Length: 307
Image 1 (cartoon, rainbow, N blue to C red):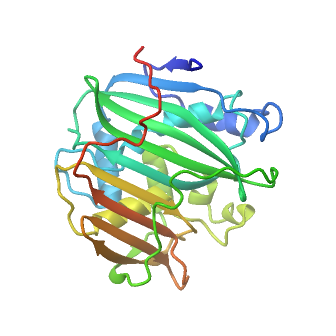
Image 2 (tube, rainbow, N blue to C red; image 1 turned 135 degrees about the vertical axis):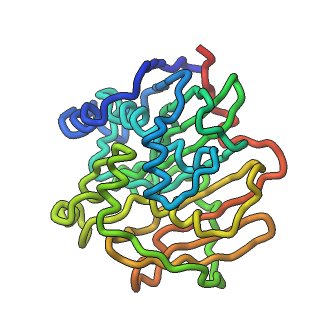
């Protein structure tokens, strides 16, 4: 097994520096030929910033129950994974890449002030029909206990040959044709800027109505992870303390200053939901939340070194 390059951080990397590298750095070689570098970023003994957590709850409409919101670890990890993906040795340009899927297991609720070790690492790359998929992996631990883990998949569109590889997890979320209308919600016009200040994600498609058309969009769009947090808030309560698995697939944009509809189907211990934006007949986000009865992991074959 090849060793990973471990990058230790005493404070979170600068979002400004991350974006400067994304825009200015030339990538080595041909994107389809270059393997992903084996990088791991680590921060130890961290706790969420209380003010940032308050703002996250406010912008997502969440109550303070003393436990981290289930999607909040992505906010904690964002500066680290953006640092890894913006480094010169990472071969895939992030500009124009699309956020495809998230697969999450929360093993148990995490206290707001619990000291944590955060690890983010590059995962696999594969050629698919639409382009190149690549993964990064997030792990939160406390005293060696695995608390929360995630595999996030991105896509760089393009034609990179015909030797396609299977896409793990892509078929986990099955279509639903008999979902019931559950709730209708509104995406505020300023939510892109508000969420960007919390996450550090200043992608212009989320914060500028003028810039979004340069990326093929009719106007600025909501951060998918905000829509997911807002959607999960409106779903029936899941078992509070049990392990949870959340799978999310991003299929289309949800525009700011628009309404979106949540359709829901309850399947035993699983909630399966779709979100629809405006008059778009196709779901923009497909997701499911499942209570897990047995201990499991997404990253069984992933090596996280201990030092």
